[in-house]
Structures are given as structure tokens and as C-alpha cells.
Amino acid sequence: MLNPQNIDKPHGIRNINTPDPVEDDRVLPAGKLQRIIGKASSSWTIDDLIEVVRDRRIRLISLMHVAGDGWLKTLDFVPRDFSHLRDVLRAGERADGSSLFGNMGIQADRSDVVIRPRIDTAFLDPFTPLPTLAILCSHYDRHGSPLPESPDTILRFAYERTLHDTGIDLHALGEVEYFLGKKPDEGDIYGADDRGYHAASPFVFGEPLRREAMAILAEIGVPIKYGHSEVGYIPASESNPLIWEQHELELALLPLPRAAEAVALTAWVLRNLAHQKSMRCSLDPIAMKGHAGSGMHFHMSPVIDGKHLGGENENGDLENPAKWLIAGLTQIGAALMAFGNRSEESFIRLSQGKEAPKFVTWGKYNRKALIRLPVVAMDDEGRTVSHPTVEFRLPDGTTHPHLLLAGIAQGIMHGKSMDNIDDILSKTKFVLDKQDASNITAVPKNREEVADALLKSRDILEAGAVFPEKVIDRVIADLQK
Image 1 (cartoon, one colour):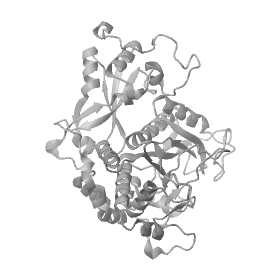
Image 2 (cartoon, helix red, strand yellow; image 1 turned 90 degrees about the horizontal axis):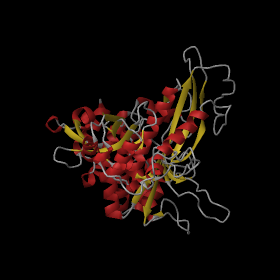
Image 3 (cartoon, rainbow, N blue to C red; image 1 turned 135 degrees about the vertical axis):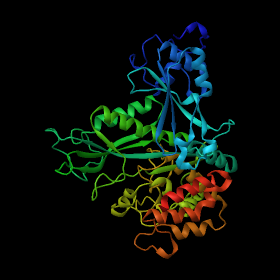
Image 4 (tube, rainbow, N blue to C red; image 1 turned 90 degrees about the vertical axis):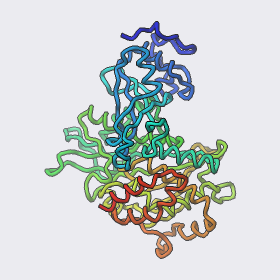
């Protein structure tokens, strides 16, 4: 049994035995552990988490991490005592790297890895029947160095390289589109294809689940920009016994490593909620041929000295970091499909979509451009209330967010190095119905074309030893199968 006398009570923590802030109407800040501990997550310590475990009577510790396939994994503990708890929180535990990163080319003689928690990512698991503290983790090799084959390591290397060499703190957000499926009942009389965009209950059945997901994500530390219903709707039929309805959660801008984890956690929350409510949740690129597909567009914002520079300056010219990002994406956008469009259905979605881009082009506002500058909301005084971003519209729900965002970071580095950047931007700018296809790259139509694009761009991705050569080799081999 855990003995609370084995530790000192840290200072500054609210008495856990007092009513939960939700119960006494104090619901901000949104993160539940932040309210309980009483300070920002960046200041949390191991002692803070031990205090939560003691006073909340936590029974399980779950180390969560993202493997080579892009899915969340868990390693669970029942602490024997406070000494054991402290050891787990401080050092983590070993695991079989060949099972976690076999698709990333990890060698058999290096398959022992260590999963080590990051204290500032902890949250209370909202789905387990036993009180559980979950913590996100990074991966290390047997020498204590970051594991090169880990997607988390690759993304952190790319992020830190960009920050160190350019001063850019690259932020991103994902637009998570998904379908909910359920058996029809007498209340399902309103749904219609192409009429669901921003529809409200009772015209959509998935609104309660979407709102619950938003609240849960905020509680576990994933900030949300907004959520709404989407255009997709598939009625039940003899061959398809479920009604399928499309929704979207747009996340908030975060530094790249946190942005990738936010996408993984969002998919985890949505699937858990759907499972609880006897629904199906699909992030697949298409739910059914001929119907609207689901993308996972990413928005990027290069930040320097706290200023978001993903748009235009007061003269209407692109900020330099925006130019670097856009130019880099025009050069490696096709190759990034290796990480952002990982199934055969990905190509079906692109071939049948009404707004699907056909070429690697960029533009303002136009949704047929692969890379675009969306409009920025302003108040009556002309003050922007959201940051300008560069949107990459190619990825879908098969995305491995860590590897995709690492590739995007490598893209901005490549864009900065271009001597002919203005010429590249001129040639790849989207012009409605007047595009000269001889000057631009077509979006790959199959896995073989993606492999060819990755071969041509591998030097950009491997620059700075961010993507290990063997990882790129393995991805290309899988695409060519």
C-alpha cells in the first residue's frame, strides 16, 4: 500500500480534498491537472504528480507513446509503493523496440529501448474505470540517447534544428475530419449529403459526441480551436447498415512536437467515445466511394520572437518565413505523401474530391491550391484574432503526424536555402484555369509515384541527420511493394 508519509507534501498545491473546480464553477484553465496542481504544466515536478496520485487515490500509471505506425501505445503500472512510483516517473521502463519500430528499420541488436515519461504531459485518463494517471513519453536507446528510429525523436530533431538554425519556433495544428457511424433509428430523419456543414442538432446526431470530445481534450491538455459538423453523409442501405456522418475538430496552434501528439490524442479520444456509445469512428480517407472523403489538413505558423509570420506583411508581401515554408513545400509536398497519405484509399479521395488539388501549387484563399494562405479573422478595428497560417491540404486521416511535421520542418529549412526562391514561387503559384502544367509537379496518383518523389527528396529529409537513411530506405521499400 502507498504510504503518504514516505514523501514530503510539495508547496503551492491546492488541497485535493476540496471540491473539484468543475463542481464549484471554476472551469478555467481548461486542463484538469493544471487546475488541481495549481500551476502551469511547464512547472510540474515529479513531486506534484506523486501528490496527485496520493490524494486522488490513483491506482494505475499509464505510459503512453507513439510508435512507428503512428498509433498511441500504453505501458501500464500499479505502483507498489512511493519509491516504485518515483522510479517509474523518473526513468520509465524498457521495451521491445523491434515490435514498436520494426517498420522504421531498427536493428535486432539494438531492439532494447527505454520509454521515459515527460512530466508536463500528464493527464487523468478519462476512459478507464480505475483512477489512472497517463503520461506521454519519449524513446531512448540503451546508452540513454534519443532513439534515432523513434518518430518522436525525428520530429524533435527537426523542430530543434529549425529553431537553432533559423530562430523559427514552428507551430502547427491539424484539422481532424472523421465519420461517425451508427445504426439508424426513428430519430434519423434529417440527414442529407452535402447539407451537413455547420449543421446543428437535431439535423446531425454526432453533435453531443463531438462536444464531449472537445471538453475531454481540453481536460487532458489538448487545446481546441473549434469543432463543427461537415458535409459528408452516407445513408444506410442493404450493403451499408450504418448511417455515416462527418465532423471536424480543428486543434489549436502548438509547437511541432505537441501538435503531433495533439492529433494522436484526438484520434484516441474520438475512438474511445464512439466505442462507449456503440458507434463507429472512422478517420479513413473515404467512408464510401463516391462520397465526401476525410482529410487532415495541417496549418503551420513560423514564429520568431513571439511574432507569427505565416502570412503577409503590411505591404502585402509574403513574410520571409512564409516564403521559405511555401517554397519548401512546393518542392517536397509530393514526397510528404509517404507520411501523410498512407493507404490506397488516400488516392481515391484525391481523385474524386471536388476541391482536391491536382498539382503542387500555392495560392491565397483558393481551396484548389495544395498550399494556401487562408483568410484571417479580424475585429472591427482590423486587429487579427487568430494567427496567419500556411495550410497544407494534402494529408488525410492515415497521416503519421510526427513524421509528416518533421518533413514539413525540413521543408522550411530547404526553402530558406533556395537561391531561386522567387522564381519557384512564381512558377508554382496557382492560377485558375491557366496553370502551365509543364512547370509544376503533379500530385502522385499511386504509391509508386510517391516512392519516386521520396527518392528525389530524400536528401532534403535526411539533412542534419534528422531522418535516418535506413528509415527512408524502409519507407521507400514499403511504398514499392
